[in-house]
Structures are given as structure tokens and as C-alpha cells.
Image: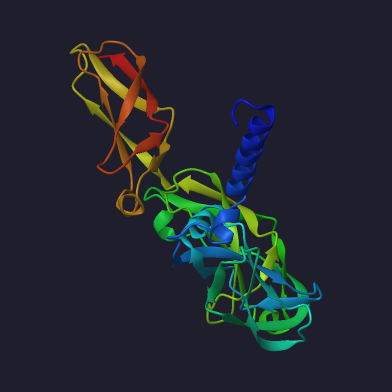
Length: 310
């Protein structure tokens, strides 16, 4: 038969048919091959499509569910990988109130069954209400660096539109910009914050906001204190001369450091070395920093040293 043209055509046709049936899982669906046993697998976190009229607000419906699939092993493996099936809650014919609704699963092969865990959801349908609220942002004191203080917080935008059921919206007490970053703040920065809505007991409310995120500008400054400078001389001028006086170009300086250190400082010293000097001159003098002080502004002062003959 292989030597005949018709025999070769028949073999080619049979191979093509076999490949077509294999690719389209026809053998699996008609259970042609023995040994394909029915098994169960749970597919977790399957998204739920909620179908409802836009004039209403729906709360209580889960965003994801687990689905237990039962059927042939090869089909289950494919479905776990592709997840090409849908789970939905159809509320389009439901009226205002509380309802227990069964999930629907679509897009499965004929020989695969599904059970949503849990099988139903209790949802609340309310008239949609929109209101505008001012956003607040709380910056934890623990985030501010030990040598810094919070100067101000600016939120952009300052207000958001809250949408939800009338009962939920009426309970709104706080609309907060929730910051997820917990790092120390030692300079001005801008962070993105998610909007959270609470009642007076700080229970999170099931509502949506527009926008859902805001920009939070955080301004900080270094802790400081202005104190006088005490000038002191060290050493002695030449024996044929005498020190007439020392004048500084800054009578006070700004001292930076932790608040508990600043509270203990009332002045700061500038020591001028005059050993062996025989004429007037101007010197740069570094300030003596108490322990805990991080810096001063200015860091160096000028000392005009006036010397005269005996």
C-alpha cells in the first residue's frame, strides 16, 4: 500500500486527523484513553467579576475566591496554569438591601466541575452616594530624625471624592493618607500615600475614593538654638606688648543637635591662641563643640586680635 499514491494520501490524512484531535483535547474529553481518573484541585485567589447596576453601591463581595475543580488530571493541570475560566456574582436584578448570592463559574470543559469556596457571598446593595472630604496625614514622631523637627505637611490634592453606600458614607469620620514608608526622615521628601476611610472608632469603611492615592510633601528642619559666643585667650603675647582686646565677627552662632543637648547649652566657647604675638591680626577660630552638638553655623568665626606696645 505504501507504494501507491492513494495509500500515502490515506496515511497522511490519518496522521493529520490524529494531530488535530490531540491538540484540541478531544481524546481527553471523550475519555478515549484509559487511565484518566477524576481528581480534584483547588485553584486559589481567583478574581471575582461583580455584575451590578452603576446606580448602586455593592459592599461585602470578595475580590478573590478559591475554586475547587474536579475532573481529568490533564485538564486540571491546564486550568491551574492558564486559569481560563471566570467566577462572577450577578447582582443586576437585585434590589437595595442585603442578599446572599451564589457564585457562577463559566468557561470550563464539559468534563470538569467547579465548586466555589465559599459557595455564596452575603452582599449589601445601597444607593450610590458621593461626598467630598478633606484628607489628613499623620506623620509618626518616630520617623522624624532625632536631630530634626517636623515643619509642615502638604497633601496634593487636599480633598478626595468618597463614593459608597449611603449608610457607609454617613459613618465617615476620618479620611487619612496612609504612608507605607517607615524610614527615618532627615530631609524634605515627597511620598505616595493610599487613602483610607474610617468611622469614629477607626473601623475601616467599605467605600472607594477618587483619587485613591495622594502626594504627601513632608518638610523637616534640623533642631537648632542660637547662643552667644564666649571668647577666651590662650597663651601670652610678646613681653614688649600687651593684649588690648579681641573682637569676633559673630557674637552668637546657631548650634545644631538633639533637643536634650540643646536644652543644656547656654553659650559656646571660642579660644584664641595669642602665644608670642607682637602685632594685631585677624585669625580664623574654630568653636569648641560640646558633646552631642553636630555642627554650628557658622562653623568658624573671625577673631580680630588687637595688640599694642607696652
